[in-house]
Image 1 (cartoon, helix red, strand yellow):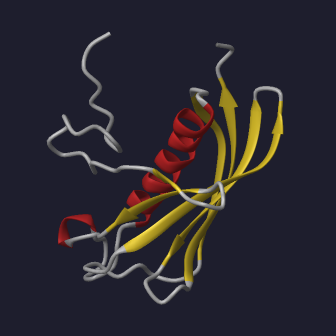
Image 2 (spheres, helix red, strand yellow):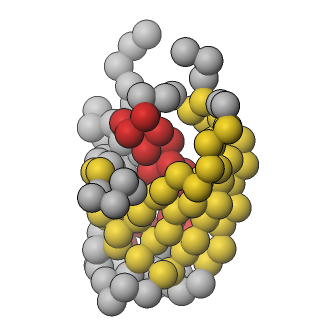
Length: 130
């Protein structure tokens, strides 16, 4: 297999987001991202599709890096509560809610700098057999 050009996390993808996931002390994982004008939909507001992309990327990386389990998204539900302004660092956090065999129920959120939750997500991730 060739070089990874993952839109979310690959450093090799020139138009990718170049995300890095970090373990947190409470067994969650986090990504820190500062959206720019290139990431907006309405003027000064981050595009919801890109917010969803970051949440999805974080959920998958949580399992790969935290559990050594490659997984794909089986279901993803996103609730937008507050707009995410561009130019401010946003913290994205994921956690495992329940694990049953290869199926992981997970949650993720996007937190604004003042601590308010801007976006919440629930997901089912299906891990590979290996």
